Length: 65
Image 1 (cartoon, rainbow, N blue to C red):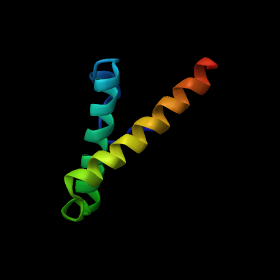
Image 2 (cartoon, rainbow, N blue to C red):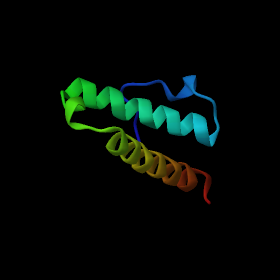
Image 3 (cartoon, rainbow, N blue to C red):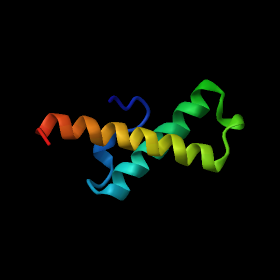
Image 4 (cartoon, rainbow, N blue to C red):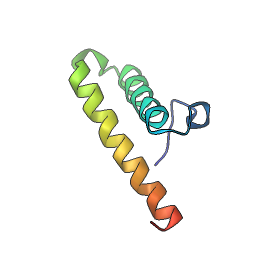
């Protein structure tokens, strides 16, 4: 998983910090593509949750969990 809009290392290495990075990434991407007006708070949170789950799955693969 790649973060194009935020620096993941600038966030705390906690569940909350990683989720916030995912949320900020989703918001930044939506604003960049012009899709932000179509998103509501619930949709942004759901998209961030999917990104978070994908990121955590990638981390688990890297560490062999």
